[in-house]
Image (cartoon, rainbow, N blue to C red; front, side, top):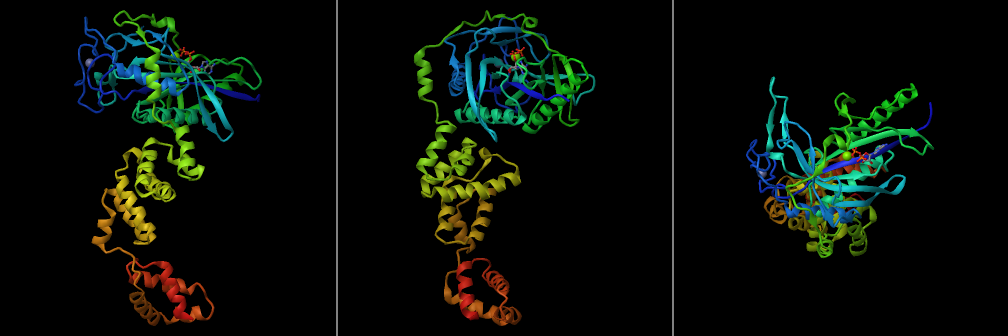
Length: 476
Ligand code: ADP
Ligand code: MG
Ligand code: ZN
């Protein structure tokens, strides 16, 4: 078999976090009763006129600036004509000729180092409604609540060569856009959707092969599977002397295979023409500068600041800044207690362990920075021992509460009273003659059993280091 290289370009749709739709004032809130967030504009009634939501334009420019694009100062909308029941106007307002952002790039990092993935363009468009087929026999029903929700489509150049690079690219986009507050970018809820264009070619070849486009990918795992599956399918065709057909394919992650949906349409199939109901946009340099000035701190800047300002390892800084919610929590907690490395440890170890166990994201954490700071202080001062601290944290993770109050109420403070401890230790020694004998005969491990008994007698509240020292003294 010949040696093949995979070539991948992505079209990523992102739902913008505006309160209202792109061309009308209907709400974009998710999960409402079907067809309640609708009006004549977003249901395509004759005579209804669209008006552009300025916030959409602002978010699109912000994303463009953060991805090193040139902003198109004279930009226009175009009409893309197609008939489909989820598209009540029978056209979609999109951008073909003068997309809002062009010629950008993002830098990705994989095992093999850093690399730039170029962005061809970012354009604005409206989302379609949603068809529901599954629960109904013989009929399909339609919900227009999503119709007119603002989207940006980020089109990359075919610069990626592996699933690993694709995922790094998507992660970078997601982080950047989340940091900007322009979208929550959830693949599983559809606020970020990736179409994967893939072709293969012989290593060393200068020309690209024929590509297919895969849709319906709603997790990183599905994307990785689909890339592997499609690469193999195309190589198999070429090895048999056959050709890859340019088409749109639907990936079925349960079956781990794809099937052709339709042959690929070209732009001229859509009869694009300039949208007559909207005036072109003329974007001033001043406004672009203003948006640039108000851009929040993005991840690369945050990373270098963390290393300087908090003196934490690069490893910690990278993990803490993976999501904005986690970074915000770290900064707020550290601002209160002033112990960056200790806060980092709590977030990276216990918090992330429980997040994984409960399958939640950083933006769903419910405990406050104030209470985490109190817990860090309680543990740091030795008021509670580390095992108790973990238990208290687990409670706080479930339901936010003041750990100082809880420790007092439950009597969890560490027993540091040596007299009380000595009394308990004497009882333990009397009750465990065998362990005492073993220890004295040179079995160091036997002290573990005595420690365990003592800790149990104090309900886990003793300071283990103090107990150990006292025990060693007694057994001399
Ligand atoms: P269309 O508008 O017809 O979908 P585009 O030229 O806009 O086509 O490309 C869509 C996406 O496909 C882009 O992300 C681009 O990088 C990618 N792409 C184009 N050619 C190839 C190819 N030969 N192999 C892989 N990806 C490709
Ligand atoms: Mg396209
Ligand atoms: Zn509407």
